[in-house]
Image (cartoon, rainbow, N blue to C red; front, side, top):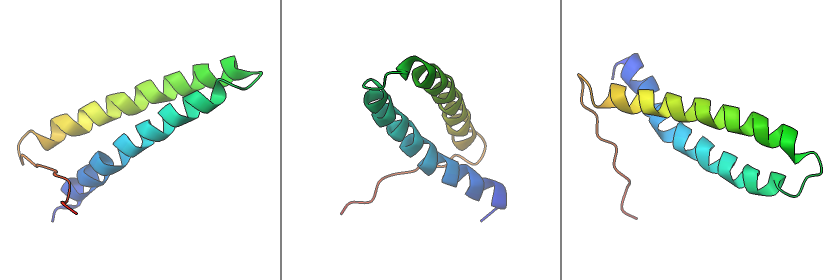
Length: 73
């Protein structure tokens, strides 16, 4: 497997998990006294991760069309 394709696959698996963690953190930060600082930074980082994920999806569906499917357990 090509190294570039491998890195794209790793990003395709990891970035959605990162977004879920950030969403969970956002709920937890609501109880902080200084939540505005954390929430503002979290929003910026979340937007950046979402842009990265969109770019990875475009790479996956371009030339080497890669499909990721969950395993049935």
